[in-house]
Length: 96
View 1 (tube, rainbow, N blue to C red):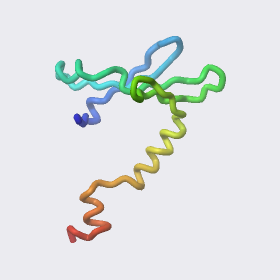
View 2: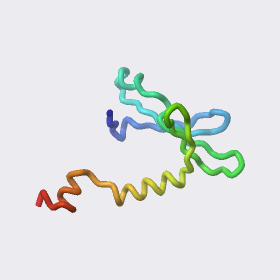
View 3: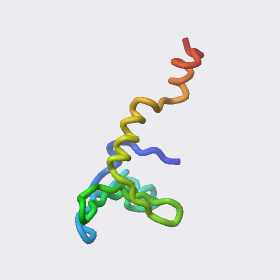
View 4: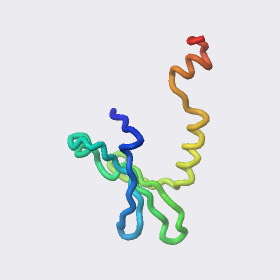
């Protein structure tokens, strides 16, 4: 697994039979940058409703998920997701 720094993660608006927004990695390291499948994520708008969808790879297919659900997931993560050391300190009191 490779974790990227915030400054390495970029967005770009592109035209792909309509406007889309893509997320990609630009580390400046050609070896790393060439070994990543692009785009990492893509946002589309529904032609009829303008509802936004996040497209992600899943197995050998692509799936589109409503952006509103992804936002809810991210908001929940801000409150509910913590590191193992946080749980050790705040729940199991191992680092007190």
